[in-house]
Length: 586
Image (cartoon, rainbow, N blue to C red; front, side, top):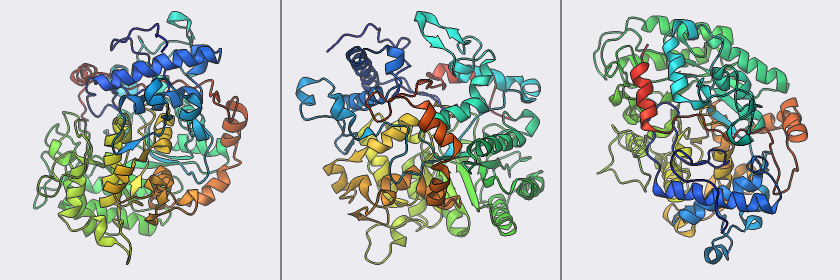
């Protein structure tokens, strides 16, 4: 095996590999230290990248932007962490003995391509960017400091300027801006999501904040992004959330039962109707952070409280008046910064709220997951607790309210689907994809307890750069025989989403493609096949597939301007330092 010229300390691990599985954060949690296995995966991928780029007579900067380099990344995961319940199918039969990458095998079927595969409609329902020219940089400079501390590419020190960087690497084309905050801008949103990944359509989501003058992405700027994407494409590729804070003006946690009414609740509900009137052609749901409020640690709220009921009833009223706006509530459950009300971050209230409001569609962002929630098979009702930041907590919330998928099975079928709850994978899939067994348990139990048609695709990009690595991971991943037996999925992710016990009759019917976007399309009132027909020949697709990609259909198919950069913080210290300078609060 060729030796790598790079040192393999934490600080020196290369970040330009296309499959970077070292811990990073979306700002909502402190990343753990890298594990021995994670560093081993990166080391092995780095060594094989050096070996193969020489065989192709390519520079490193050229090769790491190819599909071959991405295939090497998933091969390295399978070598270091050979899954018992799942894997990426990247190992040839002779790999176990030679311990060298058979690239023809590892990159078979062209799953790493930026082009869309048959049946794909990739709908990313959790995407973000900021407005680098907004008033928030004047009225709330602490947030700018927060971004600079959180994301290296937004820092005046590490963001860099276009030109030649250390070691002769070329910067620019998205790798560095004169104003570092521009690295989190609308331009980079368009580039990372629509040119540097196979993403078909997006929901531009929001972060919790006080009024728009302090907002890193005011709603009018979000509207500009939606208009820009759709105007450039000549089709409808992007829609958006609006943020709602029903607990604005409260001074304590709003638990179920009697509680003083938040001072600005009526204003928030009226604002929902006003935004629906103004942005009805772009708005497709309401984003909430139950754990975030005026008072750090202690002013969260619950969906099954009186305040939650008023909000959910307003969601229904808005959709009745403006039918083009689906009754979607995208609620953040899981990852919780120290300043959040930790109790309200848990998914405990999902089961009772969904059962009491059957006409509201609940998309549980992050599926209740938090760092440290090692994925195993569901631990059982006796051990699982719904008031914990865990995926099992979400499942338990459904089960203790008699609302899990099995209760909605059609006659003669083994799997059911909860009518109005979707488990979203933003930041979660990235957190487990370096461990195929955890990936298998995550998907297996969500399919079992929430339903094969109730897992929604989201990535939390732009915070992690291009989501292409996460997309390819789901394209490649499947259950082993043991995993299929455990979760009663004889065809794995190639099973029919309508009846997973049989093989899908068409690629558009696979569980895999359902997760990648078709499931969420139903929640957001998107017709995926109609959208695919529109998008097939739109201007963004033409630019990506006809002008942007090089050497299409080969192992060295390349996106030459792709950054391969993950902007999130890499250590707990980076996150905590930023929090001491800019606490997450209004």
